[in-house]
Every structure is written in structure tokens, then in C-alpha cells.
Length: 121
Length: 177
Image (cartoon, rainbow over all chains, first blue to last red; front, top):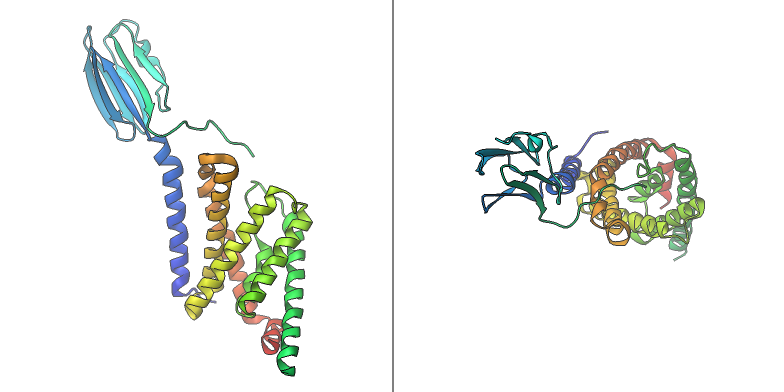
């Protein structure tokens, strides 16, 4: 028994299909949102699927927001209690992090519809 | 004339036998424990793989029809929406397997045929699940569903290929058809 030319092609097509579906089902969805940062009356919008570090200025100084692996978090802020720094990273549409003393508001906005929490069979 | 009539009778005998084999293998399939609900070995497809080269297209489709009915009777799903999934999946795989086998001939083995058949069957079923039940969320199970389908189809294709090259019964069946 020997694999023939089109057999390899069939395996390749199957792998491509699995890869394509994986991208569409997981990566495409997790990173499908946008991060909206509001501070000092201005608004910045960044895609959730590209890693970056941004510093936005508020009344107290610079608040640093990091976007990494499809989720956003406040990594540093000049506020006294650091509640925003301790809030978990956000990734799903509707989640938010606020730094009230520095008047910085970070939220995730979905670009495609609602995400399903879970599916059971 | 007489010769062709007996040939047809023999072919129909073969269809009946392969259909019965589908029924039997469906029963075996149900006995295999499934860690996840969408994992199927698909051993009931073995007779279909074997008859691809053996029978003309209408009779291959007849075997597939018998397989669909046999599975539905055994599973008790004949009158439920599950039947629709089974029928659509089986027909999609049958048409794609026939297409690739007839198109590529010696350049494709039953392994490749099985993998492509499983791919078409599973994709159609996912599409049906998306349209009928789960909506967009159906795609979330697509990668493991198709990956497992590819693996089981390759294994089944390898077995069918081995069987096709060694079975004396099949060699005899080739003679009479």
C-alpha cells in the first residue's frame, strides 16, 4: 500500500481546512474587537489583535494601556489606589477598565456580533 | 441480453450484501465508546469505499441510500432532525468520493478518497448545524470535528485499500460484475 499523488493533496486540503476553520473560529473571533481608550476628552481606538503599549495623558499624568494576545489591561497609572492596574485584562465586547482619578476609560467594542459564552451538547 | 440481465441481478445481489454490511457495521459503530459526541469512526462507510470501483454510479448511490436507512433504523433517528444530518453527510461524502475516484483514478488511493469524503461530509454537516441549530457558534467545533474526521477517514481508507488489494471475495466480486 502506497500513498499516491492526490492522497498527499487530500491531506493538504484537509490540513488547510482545519487551519482555516481554526483561524476563523478562534483567532478571528478573539481578536475581532477594538479597544477604545478615552482620556482628557479624546478617544483612541486600537484593534485588539495587535500587541501594543500606549500612554494616554490624564489630569494626574500618563496611564499606560497594554494590548497583548487579544486582551487589554492597564499596566500603570499615576492614581493613588491602582484599582485599574489590578483589574483583570479585558478581551470581550462590553468589558471595561476605568481609572477614575486619572479619568481614563478603557473598553472593548465588538466589531462582529455577540460572542457565545459556551455551547454544550 | 440474457447475459446483461444476470449481470444486473448479480450486481443487485452485491448491493444487497454491501447494504447489509453497512447495517452490521453501523451496529458495531454504536458499540464503540465515544469520548466526545462528534467523534465517529465511520466504519459503516467501508462498504461504500469498497464499492466505488465495483459498481456503476446509480448502484453506488443505492448502497449509500441503504447505509443511510440502516443507520437511521438502528439509531432510531429516522424521523428526527438527526436523520437529515446523516443523510446530507452521507450523500455529500458519496458524491465527493465518486467524483474524486472517477476523476483521479490511479492517482488517488482509498485513503485520499476517504479523507476528501469525510471533509465534504463534515463540512456539510457543520454548515447544516450552523443554519438549523447553533448559528455562528457551530464553527467553534469545526477544527476538532474536521481533524478527527480526517484521522478516522485516513485509517478507514488504509484498511479499505488493504482489503481491496487482498480480499479474495472482492476479487471474485470483480469477476462477476
